[in-house]
Length: 120
Image 1 (cartoon, rainbow, N blue to C red):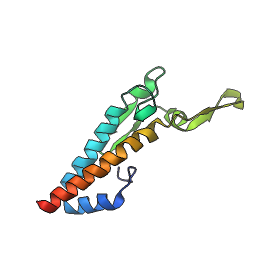
Image 2 (cartoon, rainbow, N blue to C red):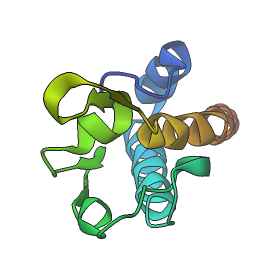
Image 3 (cartoon, helix red, strand yellow):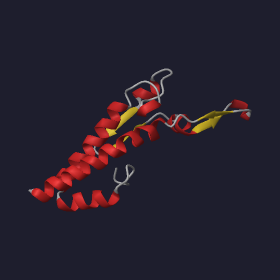
């Protein structure tokens, strides 16, 4: 989240300048929600594609970070060539879907906390 993956950098800067504790709480909430959404089967809506379950089990959450540790995660996200180079498996964009689902929630939470900080 420190690199503004969900967007709204101007709102993020404003809230962080007003109250970094509230900003950190908003970020933690976003990461937690993305982590929980990724527990769903299937790439639609931000869930994790499921074959053997290894990719889903490799998801991780740190303070302000969410992702996958399996080395093949980027290949599932963006697509890859098949063995022998004869074909291409399209990407499933499961992480992008998760971020897109979270972005409006993030903006709403930032707006609420800015309003709350201004009225405090």
